[in-house]
Amino acid sequence: AQTVTQSQPEMSVQEAETVTLSCTYDTSENNYYLFWYKQPPSRQMILVIRQEAYKQQNATENRFSVNFQKAAKSFSLKISDSQLGDTAMYFCAFSGTYKYIFGTGTRLKVLA
Amino acid sequence: DTAVSQTPKYLVTQMGNDKSIKCEQNLGHDTMYWYKQDSKKFLKIMFSYNNKELIINETVPNRFSPKSPDKAHLNLHINSLELGDSAVYFCASSQDFGLPDTQYFGPGTRLTVL
Image (cartoon, rainbow over all chains, first blue to last red; front, side):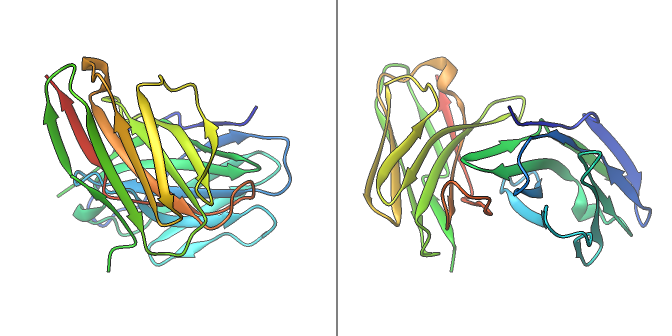
């Protein structure tokens, strides 16, 4: 069965610094996507970044980038130049065959 | 120009009442979902619909009845509300079902049962 694990319930980072959120997953599938979603206090679920498993190149979206280690089944999110607006819950998610699974989330607080 | 919309955003009601939450997507997607997010922020899928047909019911009590009048709409009706139903309910949609794909979420409906 597929699982998604986020081992850091809470993290904090100073404004303008860099922070990395961890995610590991388990699957026997070869074709899957991985995601990071952001949920700010407004509770909207916002797609931050997507990584297709068949792509070797790590996905990037402006200040957000991932470190995708397929063999190790690891998918971390790096946020550069952290901003106060990055304060939110961050969810790692897996999409495979008939499955969409979320991790338990990491609460990130950006400090002024 | 909202992609996935839900109404209402807040719902406060008494135990035992019946309530509905509506969802609409204008992305042209074939698949829609309902999720429940509890007080610990854990997201759990409830239902998956593809082309108006129920595909997956993740052991949700039968007090919860989804209805999809067309591909763009998926409503959730809840009978005999209980205290434990208090949560945030999210609607989502994706183009494909059964294949890896991106889900897009609505703004959520916070349901409070008193």
